Image 1 (cartoon, rainbow, N blue to C red):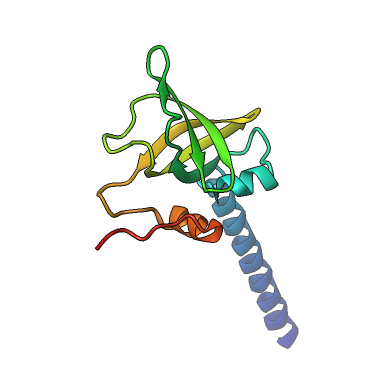
Image 2 (cartoon, one colour):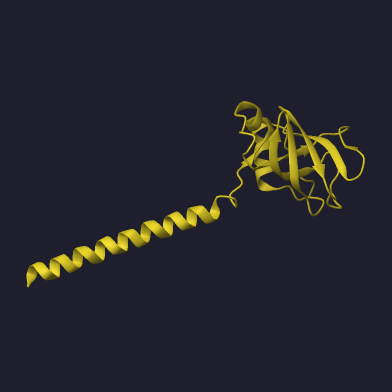
Length: 147
């Protein structure tokens, strides 16, 4: 009788372990496209991502680099004070997007150019995304907003 209870207990533990492992694999599979790591221009230069990797690039839009091409294609550079990364974006920019302001773009590197599929900009005069502010503090470029 005891061996039957022990055998049943082992079967339940094995079934629970398999179910837990299956759940972990399914969660990881579901998140594979939804996890986009943030990188500053310095990190992109020092540890270049693969061309297939989608990530978020953030920093300040470098003054004097914003140019509009034909159609909806926009080119500009993003800097963290140490390095600059050229960016190409096709689409409509947020209303508050401008030179010298913080931004975060989602996309991939194609050669030396970051091709963005989405651009996010500040939403008021004093806002700076936390990731951008932290990377600018590391390079000594960050200026606290005027209070």
